[in-house]
Length: 168
Image (cartoon, rainbow, N blue to C red; front, side, top):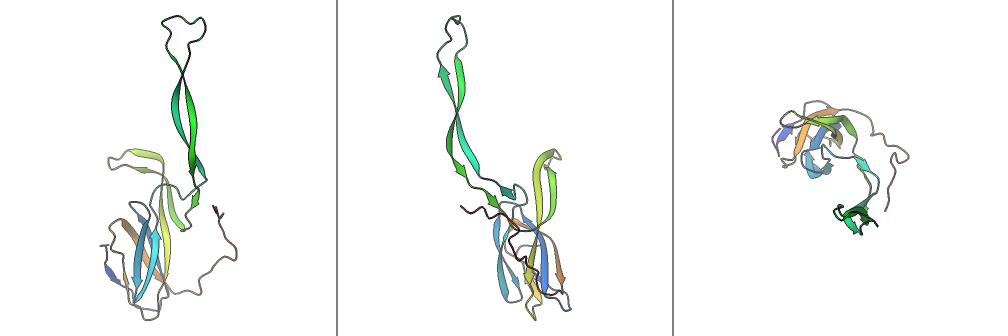
């Protein structure tokens, strides 16, 4: 699908459009237009983490120690690694529904990259009455793998949050 492309919606009674998508280069803000209604979404990166606890950051340096008493004159110098606390990288949770997950991926050369997680995400957009087209964002970093339409009742929403809040 070409970036910025306008696609005709199928004829029929539909009130919701679903996208299967991910970004190829970091999270990307994108505007989708269904009929005359515009909606900005954040298309999540296809790889990386979808959540992470707070993470302490450290600087490791070598500290030289005096020679041991009685060490031979040609003994190697004594050093030890010292960790210095440098800060805190805050935790996060990406709330976009994950539609597909892989625990590894392959490089362009075909080599395995174990534990390099990959994701595709599900996005939902309301289709306003009378809308006949969807215009995709003009962003070549966004990959849309599928689009479908549906006629369904009101969107179901949980009464309580389904995620930790990680408020800072």
